[in-house]
Image (tube, rainbow, N blue to C red; front, side, top):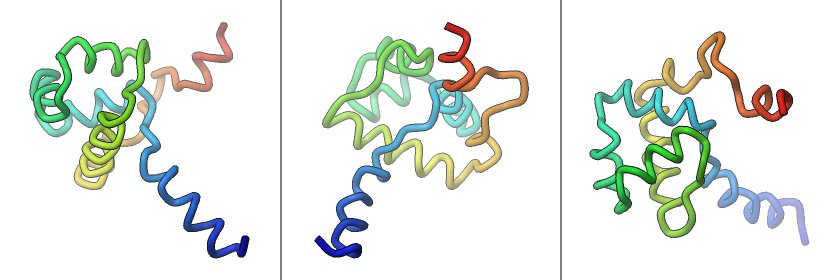
Length: 98
């Protein structure tokens, strides 16, 4: 496999990378969206959005692609909200605390 072919196979994996749970909530709030707004758009129950923002669950296909697309577009529109806030634990720091 050539390097170019390998890079093309990696791109779809990166397209579906989701930001940390707290950043998901920050992006939603920056856009002025409710958890119900997001749930209705993605096609899930509001409780699924709550759990995803708390890091208790992660979206699976086909909702994962839709969530990744939504969050990517929100991050483009609200880049300040795409950054983890100071003092807020990141996934790495939360895992290190266990």
